[in-house]
Image: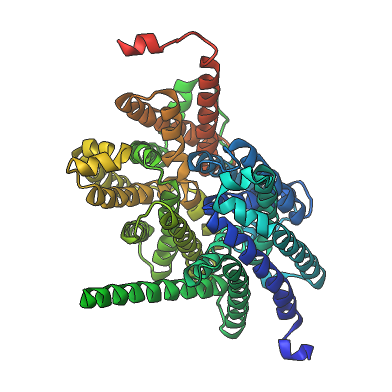
Length: 283
Length: 297
């Protein structure tokens, strides 16, 4: 049975990738719904700096990843009004944080004799085929925990995202939910960075969620669809990258996600135009 | 950056003389100044129009452009301009709405953003032995700027600034209050397209100095700092350019005397300025109307 799934590195990638994609799909749905995609983008840049800072100080990159993304997520919640930071603040802070990442990269490659020169590229663009069995297991476990957390707060968070004022009036802890959500976004970003890299996390968060919201207006169906699409695109990407030589897995995953989204957008535009011309014909 | 060279003497005049004794540093300063002026002015409008995310996506498109150009054996400059302008055109073609439209727009922008970076990564994977260049493309490089590069940067900057000067007033009106501007007959939609193309050009220029990922240091930070300090458009535009130039010059100086990449130095200087402006503004609230009385006359 396991032989069917290919060599060990592919099995590890599938195990971690499936869990990470499901988490990214769930978190991404709310990011798009709450118009916080830019926040996810900023957090993925923070992931780069965190990972390299940890490497520069001789720690496991994952320690830096989680500490940085969750820490900054909480900080952004505190800075922005009502838990939503404004885009100029995010832009300024994340450009500087990326600059710090380069600083740590230089520090790491110049001071550590065991330094891997391609560490920067690995963190930026991911190396899902390089995960060991233990790493894949931990990644999958954390991703499952993120999924459970999202499902737990999904109902009140949906209410708070759609109509914050009414939700607050009905006694939903809107502020607390905002923070809790940002912490989950941080954890999910750190997870996904291990799979597709800090720069490409955004695609995994935004594309399946955007596709799902195009396909249906029913929130829970869209939420499930977003997670399902993310997992399917992850599998397609891993399969493609394994089958076609010289194709990095991160590119294949992102290409699958972007193509599906583009197809749905084009189909929607065509249907809209047809609907409009039919209306014209009727009137 | 250059091992074996003496450190800074901390006398700015002597240090500048030392820096300018190298042709590549002179070119770096020329290019940096051109880029700082253009990016500062365009960035000012970008911050005003709240299009930072679009600016970031246009910047990111420069990465596959430059990597693809290198793969094909063409000068990266063409890749930067081609891809940045194309990305700006794509964003301009997207429908702009208020509510649900904004959500859709940000999801599309995010996807384009990540996909562009993924394409860049693919080109690099296809082009063997290019790994060292990735950091230069992403995080900037001020070495090896030729006289021709400076001329190309200058030509593009002059054209872009001429267009900006021509549309500046209506653009300001349309940015501040699009509904009233549209009612008064200002072509808001056309202006938005023109502005995005200008943004594409400015980003393509700035990417070559600060790298794809750190363009924001020259686009957003000087403008955000200046808009914190003064609300008058002309004064804050002038201040933006000044801050951009100072950040670039200081960044170049630090990058020369330290082992760290130019992108880190420029972002850190610019961000320090941004924090100072915040602090100054916060401090000013405690005082009874300082500076405003002088400025109002």
